[in-house]
Amino acid sequence: MCTPKCLALGPDSCPSPVVADAPRCKEERDQLLGAVKGERITLHCDLDANPAEMSYHWTFNHSGSLPDTVRHPAAGAGASPSSSSPVLYYTPTLDQDYGTLACYGTNSVGRQTRPCVFQVAAAVRPFSPANCTLSNVTHAGFLRIECVEGFDGGLPQWFLLQMVELPGMQVRHNVTLSKPVFELSWAPASGVSYQARVFAVNNKGLSDAVVIEDALLSGITPVTGESRHRPTAGGTLSLYYTGKTNV
Image 1 (tube, rainbow, N blue to C red):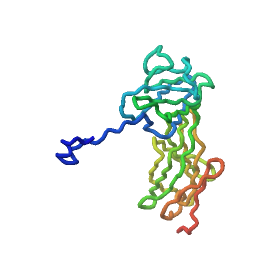
Image 2: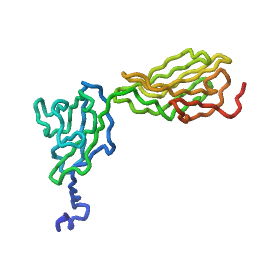
Image 3: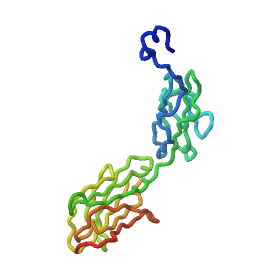
Image 4: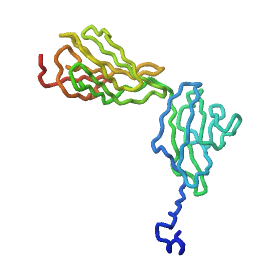
């Protein structure tokens, strides 16, 4: 509020009003986490609030508390299910331990209206990469394959590119990277056709392959430009140029 003294000094001298807010999630979307039985995962209830001092309350599958056998609050060993902590250590041990965890914050303004939600699911193989783009960058013989990461299955994932010779399906090159962006020199033998196969990988296994078959991969003079995939049934795709190529 501007006092007479502030007004006398000018409007810029008046302090901005302080707006008090109940807690709300910094991350608005629900978070999907994967874990194998016996694996401890860490959940962070990141909230914005004014005043920032607040208490926390966790629930499981919309119940009022969490089972002690699978809940390990960061407040320390032996803490009760109602312990107030922004960090939760959670260890699923049974099938029924998978489900929805929610965190509410409460400050002097009030309780959080919509909780921060964590969907805990059994860890699985990762989903296939999506929206793969194949292009020859700057000159013939240099390829770039870039995809968008899919769900990691709840485990750390990495990405595998295989260059496969057709029709015998012999794997001629393997490239493994932490991100699905591959740049490689490519000079296929004349008259030989290849396909590129992109996988996401985690400790549960490989995703379904994203299969790319294109003139850029074969032993002919490639056309310039790029193609984008359109997913088909079974998690595979094919890319073909409809224009003429120079042979």
